[in-house]
Amino acid sequence: MRLARIGGSGTAILLVCAIAGAAPVYFGNHKIQREFDTTPAWRTVEISCPLDGWTLTTHSDELKVEILGGPTVQGSDWQLLSVPQQAAKNKERRLTVCLGTDKAPGLQAEITYAVREGEGWLRKAVRLSGPKGLVVSRVDLEPMTLTPAPRNHSGKGMPILIGGRCWFGVEYPASRNRIEAGRLELVHFPGREVGGKGLACKTAVCGVARPGQALAMAFEEYLNTVALPPRHFLHYNSWYDLRGAELTPTRLLETYEGFRKGLMEPYGVELDSVVIDDGWQERRSIWRPRKDIYPQGFGPLARDLEAQGTRLGLWMPLSGFNLDVAWGTRKGYEKSSVGNWYCLGGRRFYSAMRDAAARLIREGNLNYYKHDFNFLSCQAEGHDHLPTSQHGHETNVDRTLELLKYEREIQPGIFLNVTSGMWFSPWWLMYADSI
Ligand SMILES: [Zn+2]
Image 1 (cartoon, rainbow, N blue to C red):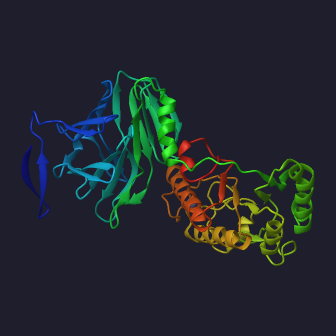
Image 2: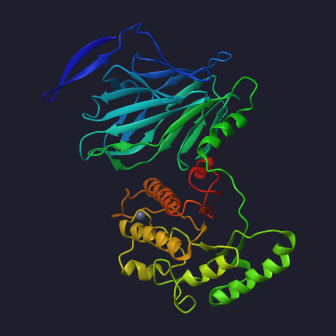
Image 3: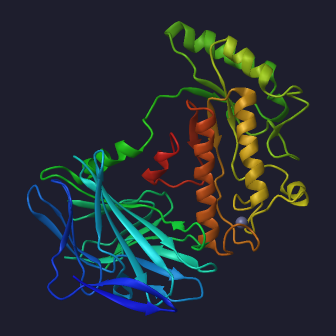
């Protein structure tokens, strides 16, 4: 490689210009390897399995970044800003490259590829930085064409399976993943400024199956390392039984007692939770229990249930569905522009939702949430997202993940069930116990 210094608006930056014939860079372990070239730009040329020499040839633009109101930067638009660095820590090895571009002065991408000992997959993390005011609209984490072209395949938050040996994905349930005419796309829509603290993009991951291993099993081997451990959770849900004003502590305790005597005790079965579905809430609030039914909140009912060997759980849509949204809007909680629910991308509603989630866990010592009616869509102006469907969706998904994480921090053993409105991305399982 030849080092060249070029000037740019008064400040010289160091560019590493690759020369023809520069040696390729290899990164991986004995199960998976990624080969890079530096001409005409930093790019992946091959993903392989060293165990038997299986190889996937890639024509990669490595990273595609769309700037709001500005250019798209990809492939040879990027230049290496320094020599690629390798580092090892514990059982993980990393390769880091820093890219810059003349197309968007000041925009820089730091890409870190990481692989752990014994694992047949490697991650690709991208961090963007740049001048204040520069907003990144769309990021394609693995823009590449594969040969021979695998069959077309797509799905939001789904792994992309290639030729029985290789899989790609994003550790995020809402990325737009697809392969069409041999072209792979793993896309998300941050709609965020890169100035100041920078922007951490979602993490891409790709893996290979060992010779003779089914690809689904190879993916599951990876998934088991990131998903919450599966567990059994038996609960009673009030929805098909008690509604509205019937949801009194007395009726709930009677119902539990009926189950306990008739169906559980004789067979040595225990119920993990008694879950109150829709109807417990004071609609003119952000998830406060009805005063006419629970004058002292959920504390007394929770203690009675615990005395009888079970716990309390609650239905609570994070969208605020079936609260009085007109009341909330007058109070300043941000409503979604596309339906009668709140937007988690609204700062006031998100903050109130976070407080409510924590308050109820503490008040009722909850061990279960049913997060129903996940609409996750909004295009409103003035919320903490760009006013488009993609950016409103991504922010709502991001905030949902933050809430799930927060709830588990407060109550580590809580069972979190995300229900209607969800789609079957395996990456939900990093945050929720069931979909
Ligand atoms: Zn919104």
